[in-house]
Length: 366
Length: 230
Image 1: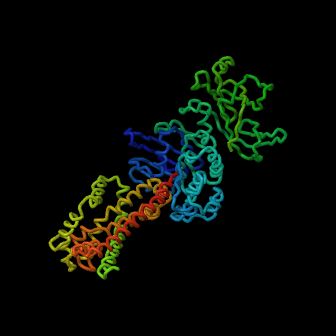
Image 2: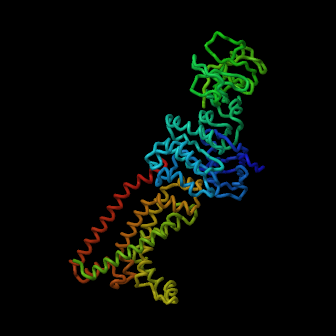
Image 3: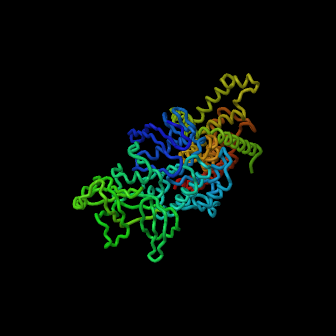
């Protein structure tokens, strides 16, 4: 394994004896990018949390290699203790120290940092996480969402080499999730710390991740850039109605008459509802496979405004026996369409054909 | 109201209980911490050993202490060779006996309090750069504060209330080893029931107030411990 200074290399073979006397084996060999958000996605029991704990050193592995941006955290039996790794860890449930107030909680790590941390960074994080008014409060006086914001700030403040987040939204209800999401998204833009984000929610993956690792029963089923993994027609984890793709686009034009934005991506453009994004801003777009239908000709007599000329790259059976999953290519972007087998038969589509994709729904994620 | 001998006995008792409580908090906390965190096979035997004074008659403990600390006992010989005399029938011997006798009353509440903290706060502290010793002082001890309070009160009260161990290794030397419980015994022996009654009532009131404060405090502090992770 190379100790590249800009990647995170993980080789783990870890046997875990849990209480039910079953042995679970985590067998992972990964090279992850040293920046952006990598989502570890999988069902519960797939080993996501164990992977994160091994990375942090909270779970003792007898054998493994963990190299983070050129630093050796574990090499065989040589293990760097947790407190000597610069690792930010945000746990699933609130993990604030109950005997310390917010300010003391977030400065706990700062005080113990081996390097001088920058004051502007401190201010920036407090500001970004919206904590100014909460500094004097104690954890029990905070809402669940506020507690997670404090926990995130506390982890970010030590300027970690890597930030590990274990389902940070799982303990929050829907409204609180929406409340904290913008903070996570802005974190993504404003810090260059690599983030490993464990989740079982495909919505969180779609909104936050750049890179995706799909974990099942302790092994990596597939991994790669988010757009590519999601456009995989034979994804090992069935997403059902949530099957769809995510790609980046740029706001190119605003049409105030119809309250629409024209979003350009490499190879095409889409009209999306104007959510107030400014011109030239980069946005992330999600198109679900169930919202894409296929036509052989460009129909103009429909209510659907987005039609893209695409080439069929792959046709795959869907988990639903009446349906097919079709992968389409438009420029650099791949789309998925979920169509019935009967329509595919009637249209006589095959790989390599040029078709029109009619897109009924486009969501701007950020 | 109290005779000079009574007052001496009361102050001796308070001094003994304070000394013993302080020693027990300092020594008992790391022991309780170890018992709360370890996966060692020694956890069971050590835990049982610590709890022994709960079930043993104080005379058994006192008897063996007397043998060990006495002129022919192993510790007695060491102290004699160091020109310290023997610890039996001395205040220091009484302190040692009381520390052993009240050990479970301090270690068990502390162990419970440490166990109630769970792994999570300590893991968080580790990721924030705290060494194991740092975690003990900055997280474990503050979070176990209610446990320390209970432990201190129980340890103090239990030392005040001891009798058998005192009689075995302390004897009955005024100002040195004659504590309140022994003083009451003396009064009764001398058929001075009034004096015995006054001191005995004092003990009842004291013990009641102590327990009241423990139970009153527990109610409040349980919430604090449980609030972690909620």
